[in-house]
Image 1 (cartoon, rainbow, N blue to C red):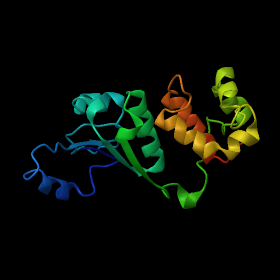
Image 2: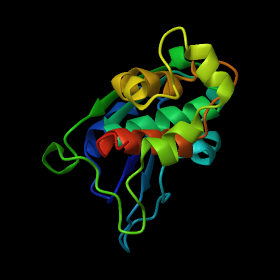
Image 3: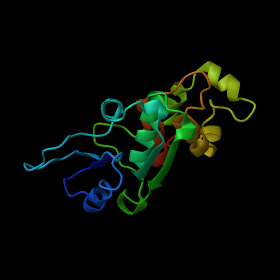
Image 4: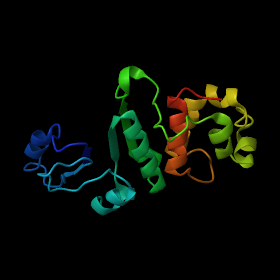
Length: 183
C-alpha cells in the first residue's frame, strides 16, 4: 500500500500496522510531502517513478486510489501513463478540500485556463473529426457541456483512442473545469 500525506501525522497508521502480522504480503510505504526533522521515510508525491520503485510488476496489480479529487485524478493519469488498464483502477475522490467548494484559484503567475487559448489546442484535427458524431471538440459549448465525460475518458485512457494524453494536459483540462470553464 502506498500512502502519501503532507505531514508525518498519518491517519490510520497504527491500524495498518496491526494488519501486517496477519497479512505478511501487505507492504506499507508511506511518503510525506512536507516532512519535519523527525521524518525518516520517503519524501515527495506518489508519481510514476515512485510506483515503479515500490510496486513489483505494476501492470498485474489492482489499484484502489482514494483521497482529494485532484490527487485521485493525478494518480489515475499517472497509472494510465504507466500502461495500467482502466479496469485495474478503482477510485474515489473526496470533494471539499478546496475552500468551501470554490473554484481552484490559480497562483498569480498562472493565468486561468481558457478554452480558446489552452483547451482547444489540446484537441488535434483527428480528435475533432473522430468525435464529431457525438459532439464537436472544436466548439466551446460542446466541450463545456460534456467536460466531465471527456475528462473521465481522458483519465481512463479511452480518449483519444490512439494515444494517452500527458498528465500535464489532463491537469490543465481539470484546472479549466475547476476554474469555471473560461471561454
